[in-house]
Image (cartoon, rainbow, N blue to C red):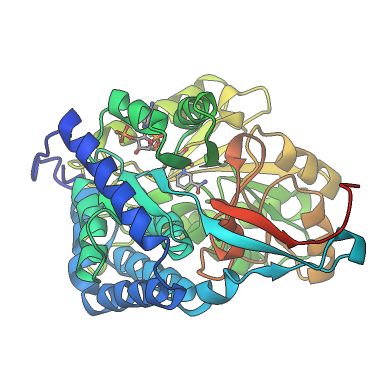
Length: 458
Ligand code: NAP
């Protein structure tokens, strides 16, 4: 479905059970070869995939804009970021997978080391908001580690899902290295139960995380979860307010507000609240909505009409419980999955929407009487993904960062999605980390090998 026109572009049948069985057989056969493939060859494959993404950036980007609706500029940026991640592992994966020689006492044996060995098939369930980046965030480290990947992507991005499989195929991967399947929920559960599947990585909502993690737990599989966020964007009184407002508008409105780590709750110190709100509102008003293929469009439609309707329902719920919703900017197009950019003020902490994640172009701006109160508001959420602090005193910003209960905090920036920074959260934002060595180590067997001729166990 093209969310700009709400027209069906193409339809894709669900996988048959026979296709699922065959895909698992093929992924396992690929694993048995790939685990013994030299690290340099694995790295070379990732490097070729990165190069292909860069060479064919426009073709890849256009698929994202067509079926997910993001602006073509943001789509190109996502393709570039995905290539960066592939290249990062191509360059560093071999070093990260070297055995770790342990320092140990003579009583522990002659030598001891930890090998990093692959586990098998990793099943990954991914969302539509960054259809390539999310797949690569798991796929690049896991393929580098020697695992194979079975992908169940979001139902509204079937062409992006197929493009990811094609990318690795074109890069020279044998069949089964990364397999895209259009799975039903029942089939997804069956894949998790299959003994050859050795790990499960999901990015998505809390609801999906709870289902997938419980299925994985029941089958005794390790899982990682990257779930929702309701990130705080704290503006202190000594911050550069003009710069904070610009970053705030970017942090909340990029990808049409459909970002897990976007700046959803702006917590502004009393002394600068009015100035911030005025400047922020003016910044948001500059965002022109329209055809995502048009180079001048800044604000895209949401990924689907259903997503747009959900966001509108949350705005209405917030208002019903006493908040003020201010619609900002030129009216958005009347067709397509658009939501008018909206700023919510007066959201009290007993408003049910205060603790809900709004996945669209809606910012909450909250007033804090002190820094302590700002931290308290920031931490008053079931989530714990990211957050930011704006201040002219970087050292003080870092002190406050230590008090924010999340997996990531940025000082003077809303968030960073980069190839060389890890990603992940705590509490209901999930568990585990992606990217860097942290992501690579999530699904490896850190196997101890000891050479010893000592007597006794202790
Ligand atoms: P979602 O409904 O949870 O969908 C995510 C994926 O899970 C899709 O592939 C979906 O498939 C699948 N899924 C859902 N329920 C399932 C089940 N019972 N069994 C098997 N698969 C299932 O998420 P969304 O609402 O589209 O995406 C937005 C959410 O993802 C937000 O909460 C956002 O914050 C979060 N997110 C987190 C991160 C992060 O890194 N922390 C990044 C991006 C997004 P179908 O499409 O077929 O339903």
